[in-house]
Length: 240
Figure 1 (cartoon, one colour):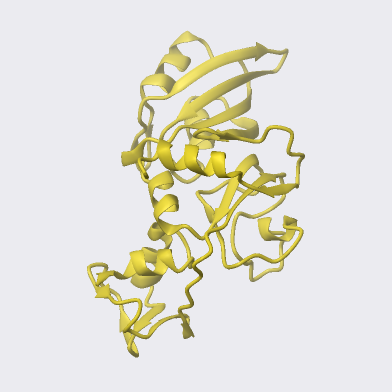
Figure 2: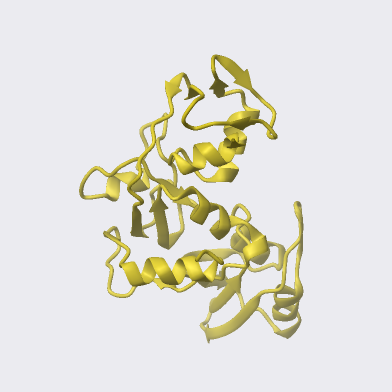
């Protein structure tokens, strides 16, 4: 018996955090009973588990797909309004996979799609401290005190941000280019940090997720991770 959200994540439904949201929203049934309590345990082999009235299916094949997300695509499995989503970029169908973390519609760069629930959980939970590196173009010219605040933590609506690494790379007439490395994955975090600091983001590109970068992968393209990349990512979050 395991926690229901872990069973769901292992089946490739979504990350463990997202599965918790499904449970709280009343979208999950176990043996015909709607479950809304996060402590609930289930047996993947004995219990009938349904999400949105569809039986849970298990895929034993673990899939890891790297995508170079362009702007204009939503990081979601489906969109009720028919807008472009990251899955439209894949060149062929894959077993059920889901995005790890988020890149908002206007952001670009590294995105991982997988059905490995445990890896996704560790990559997105701040306890495991996976580094996320971004190249950011912002309005204006952040000065020393602003950079210091960004590094030491800024108070947002959902609390103080953790320590960050921030480098000023270029200064232009009306904007600046920076690199920022964070170990959290809050919604629109980098944009909100610079907005709060008085320097709204013009362009945001994720360069890497831990040891995984884009290399020569073109915008809008995707490829499977190599076995070496998978091992490096697992090691980065303490698996194996």
